Length: 221
Image (cartoon, rainbow, N blue to C red; front, side, top):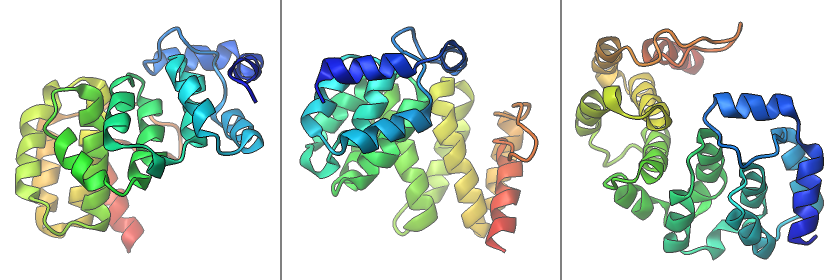
């Protein structure tokens, strides 16, 4: 499939309802408004295609970039290439996909995590915090939890919403998976109040960290 063919397919799948919802979540105008499920189905049809993925990414269209993420071979990309791509991201959903499907599948993700956690670029920081959240859950050895909590307490309240999501996730996972830091994590969340009043659908878990922590603890049994 060529770039023009892929873009035409994406455009045909777009809807005003999805465009409006994306805009509410921080997406810009360069989008068609394609449902995530339709993007996944199109990716299955095209199959892995790194060259097409790079062309799609360059369009800046969030639907094209979402499709590109599913067509890439992460291990074929260098850390510098990933960093350049990550800096382009300003939409939270896209950052989440890029982190989950590309960066977390890369063999040098820990080196990128360390570097990006010290960056002043919001997109890199967001993914750095996402990688740190993963480590807090799955491989916490060597993480300085008190220092991370200090940083969250110091920075999360004034951080852009795009960045707050992953910082808050890290706070919840530290509190949920590490009992020795639970009380402090809850205290920080209560003090900052981040996402305290965030609206959630029935049956969904609030992103307010004390509620999320309690959910994690109960889920672990």
